[in-house]
Image 1 (spheres, rainbow, N blue to C red):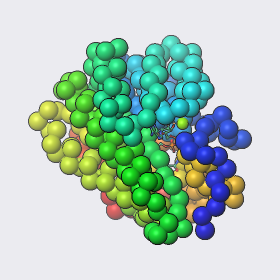
Image 2: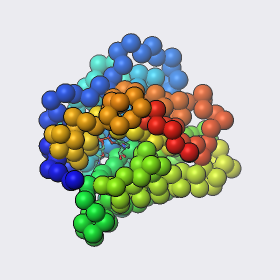
Image 3: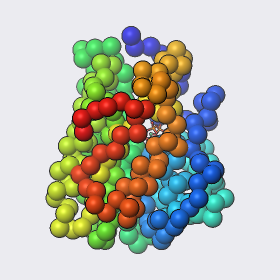
Length: 279
Ligand code: NAD
Ligand code: MG
């Protein structure tokens, strides 16, 4: 049954009672991303925020794109700076092709190149049935989740040197399906196929392309999708019987972004609470 979410999209961390855990204060940085430039979409909150903080701790300079959650984005930047890192905030709507291209241009103008591209922003609209999907929401979901990924990657590629890494956020829903998220699941399946295809097409450029397929994670997107009851039970049907925290997902991105994953391309990692999927 589809119910009223406790906040509206895109959702903000500020409005969540129980704040997601985005920073592992016990992490011992090892300079794995020293002097790298990383562009992260949806880096203001949730999984993207945790990735931005971890990348910065490991020595990367990060560019954070987000829709309009200025307070969340500022808090991410402030935390990164507290750790001695550098973050550039570029808000804007990636459902717009022109903005996607400007996002890359601004990044390159500021930092000169892109070593790591994390296509992580995403949106979803729960519906009770296929009939309830509006064309407007359908187009928007594909624009934000899939088209933007292609537009941003197209624009970024000329500025990505050999050895660069692209990491796309897909979802467990691509593998397991989700009866209330038909169109969203379809976008996430498209992302898996795009990731595999792009990895093959960039072999000669020596750019690795991988994905991360999180299970249910405690983030603003979750609270902007589920109602109060749904949020209480978010993740309970996983083998670990709980939702994951963003901080439990971010290390997968660090692995894929760093030299540690030099023999990995076209693959998807599954921080999903123990669900065994074929993929
Ligand atoms: P989140 O709300 O913290 O992050 C999503 C971000 O996407 C937002 O911060 C927002 O700024 C950005 N965004 C949305 N629409 C945008 C637009 N039109 N233009 C620019 N930016 C836009 O939530 P999250 O759960 O951390 O989501 C990150 C990614 O993880 C998404 O791709 C989501 O589909 C995926 N994911 C989440 C879960 C989960 O349970 N939370 C599970 C699997 C996959
Ligand atoms: Mg946000």
